[in-house]
Figure: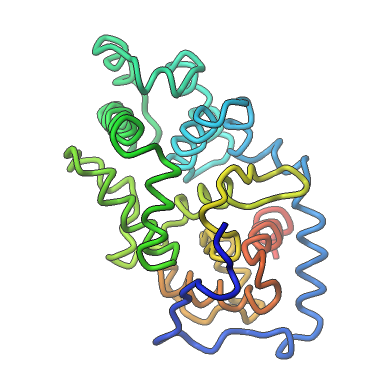
Length: 275
C-alpha cells in the first residue's frame, strides 16, 4: 500500500488558491453532514453503481463497473436500464464473455446503443478489455502501473487511455476521456472512486489498494461543478481537468485522506436538493 502522506503529486501550477477549512469555518461541517446523508446504501437504488453491485466476483465487478461508467451520461434511469441490458447481452458473466466470446456472440452486441455509444463501440470495448486482461494483467494492473509513473491519477488515466487504444478503435476514442487534452474524465474518475474508495457504508467497492483514496480526483459533472462554484470551492468556469484539480485541492483541505467522499455531498445537493 502506498503511503499517501509523502508520495502523491498534486499539481498546483496555474490553479487558483483552493478553499480551506479556515476560509469557510462552517462549510466543512455542512458538507460532512451531506456526506453522511447521501453516502448511504439507499444511494445505490438510483445510481448506476447498482449494476456492478449485482456481481460478487472481482473481475466481473471491474468490467461491469467500467462499462457502466462508460455510458454514465444522460438520464440516470436510462443509464441503469441500458447498462443492465448490456450485462444481459453478456450473459450476466462479463469477465467470461470478454475472454471467451465468439465472433457471433460479439455480433449480438452490435444492436446495443446508448446515445452516441453504439454497437461498434461496444464490440471494440470488449476486444480491448480482452487484450487488457490477457496481455496487460487486467484493469487494476493497468491503472496502478499508470499511477506509479508519476504518482498521480492523471498519469493513471493517461496510461490507461494509451493501453486501451493500442489495438486500434479510432472511432471509439471519443468515449474514453483523454486527460492530456484537458478532459475532466468524469466517468473514469467515478469508476476509480468505485474501485478504490474504502467505504465503510459499502456504497463504493474499495477493491483496489494500489491507488490510495487520498489521490482520487472528483468526478466533476454539471451538478458537482455548479454546487462547488456556489460554495466557493471552484472558480474556473470550464468543467475541464484544471477545474478537477482546483476543486479536488479544495476538498483535500477538508479531508486529505478521503477527498472524493464529498462527491456524495456535491452531487446530492445538486441532483436531489436543487441547491
